[in-house]
Image (cartoon, rainbow, N blue to C red; front, top):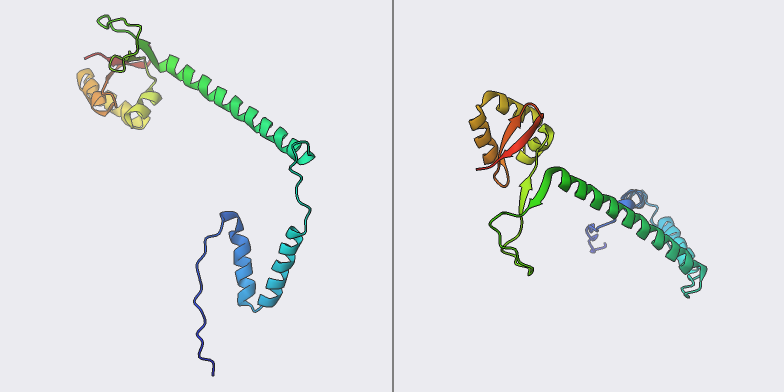
Length: 179
């Protein structure tokens, strides 16, 4: 009699892309095709090992192709980064402008304690709802059910800065209310 116990299965981490292949290999192993499976894997490994090495000399075609691909990717990345920067600038101009207070001392040296304050501009219904962490329907309901003073207090309690907001019917936007 054989007194050796079968070793328990071991869990291994596999890249997501390889999960289907590992499942198939496991199925073949359970069906008793282990020897054929090992031979096939060995053949694949030998095929990869016997391949010609890539020429990594600076003048080689492989390096030249990789360099071109990297340049293209860098260009695409730069273009996307530029587009994001422009979008942020547009958002900043649309919603937030920097102002200098009248009582701020003008100084040519940098002082982190005296940063210019950010003044908020008007917000659309959808944008204010997002800022307050609400859906647009809830914001509209609160605006209709509360008095102007109560609505300003309500929005101030939900605003991250906390700023109160008032609806301007003529312009169809919300304006920040100074305290």
